Length: 252
Image 1 (cartoon, helix red, strand yellow):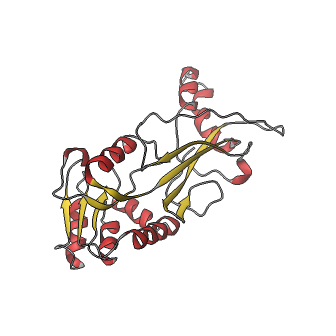
Image 2 (cartoon, one colour):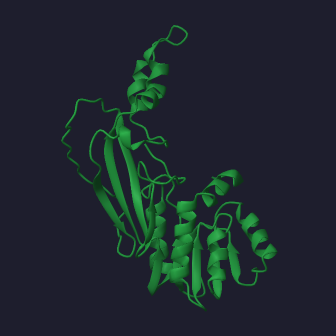
Image 3 (tube, one colour):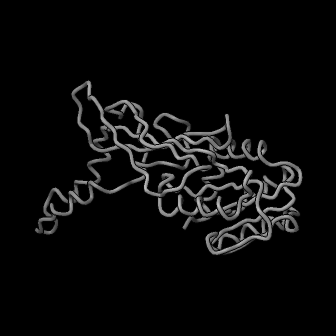
């Protein structure tokens, strides 16, 4: 669950916010019905109204929805945005949506229940000719050399702690995910694509890929960096790749 501070950093991430704004400007037409899935503080719902939506169904499971509801009232949009505090998989709507906008990825599009949630919403809440935002996510990976970051993983377990040996924990820690920044200089191999998620046709949650790299220089590989490029609508998107303008999405 995000704090209000975290929601503020998301909105303040210009590459992400500007891309979503442009995608909504492109997709929403006067009279559109929009579903904002995981509305948070309601920024996409507000923008959908600005671009002409007749009705926005703003769905959010957490209590932050009360902040979004209050914000809609302050901006005179309470009559056009209906806030629903529930999991989207448990609700039905009185009409299908023309546009379904969401940002439920977490660190990666395959995080948690994001894919299952999006597939369910597409099948039950979106009109057959409706638009999904995002349209597509492309997942990438590369081997990275990050000695300082790696040291924070292994240092507590490489030395005796209060006289106890804990090296058995080391391997487990090294095989966990962590959000952090990786620079282009930290890449040991060329990035490779390992999956493309087309949300108009996606039918399975078990996403996998096989990658083979040729290492062309003598370096140490401390782990894998995994990221995604998103296409919100054709021609509009952003990336959290190493070297890309900063967004809230980071994953090592």
